[in-house]
Image 1 (cartoon, rainbow, N blue to C red):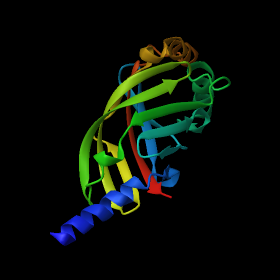
Image 2: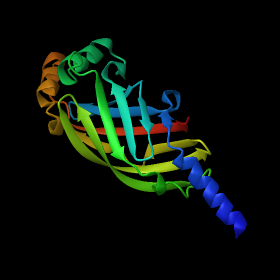
Image 3: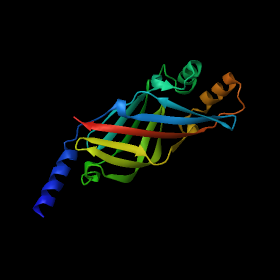
Image 4: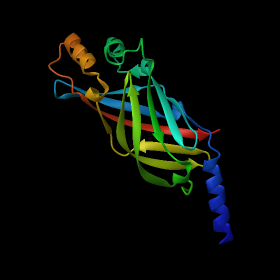
Length: 189
């Protein structure tokens, strides 16, 4: 019993020393665009930064880190959809209390449903995420989407920008629902 209590106390202290930084080299964020109703392409943001202070997770995604593998498309999305000249980053925040993860042993994971507050340009909307959180080591946590988040570009007032992309590319349609998936890894500092 003493060993169990000691292990639990040790595990709790690991999470409670709350200065966790996002490791960009071990994190990723991808989304899928669908054009002309049948052509799906996967894109990514190559830079993520963030921290977790034991109560709030904050992530910043520089819009100029978007990579679609077509430079002119990158530029058009930056200009017309994400308004990169005015808004340099997409931000995501979520309330996550340290006690929710206090009993998570190394190599164990748990499912957690968490509302994410996402801000793109001037608009903020909540997206419900089903995440698998895994303790990889005493000082490393990883969160991965169990299912893609469905981002509605209309909720962020991005429809005019999407319409401009469609016009410039000569497309019949660009789907306004965008599946998003991510893995973020945090290391305790």
